[in-house]
Image (tube, rainbow, N blue to C red):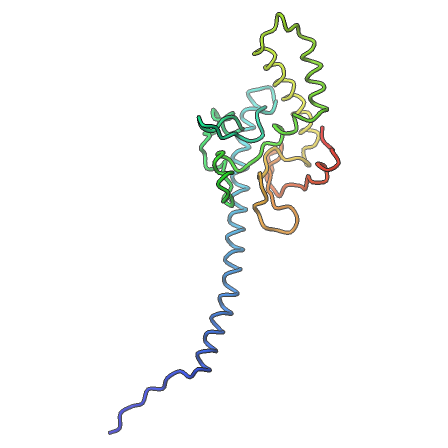
Length: 215
């Protein structure tokens, strides 16, 4: 009785198998990345909605006015200073995961404790707002008004100006937006949450920044 001969793969068959595997990888990997990006995008929008709840809770206790603080926290030797997460820590813990975008992989951004930029904290420094603020402050007598009082007046004036502006531009300017481009898509790569509580792709503010179209 002759022993059974085992048929081996030929070189051509091996090359075909390798080619098929390569094609499958080429299809699966981009799909997996797309699914991951979509998951990160959904998580980011969910975070922004949760952060908005803290902003809205603050407004309900402060005559509808927006919080007024720095647009991004600052990392110091003593830790993280300023920024919206610290300002709203009484409504939402500053270390809440909702302050971090799932797509944020930047160490410098993560070190601040938040992936999101608070736009009112940036736009309050525009000339149109600061001229009114300075005019108001000049109406006080510095000899009889403390620095704490002047700072309180300034922040209140900036908060009123920003609240009026964002209520007028409710569909245009987000309150919170990704501090960097993180969501790969055609066009704008940032998400934002607006004063009406809606979270969506942020509008492209590049043109406004270039033309100086601000409050």
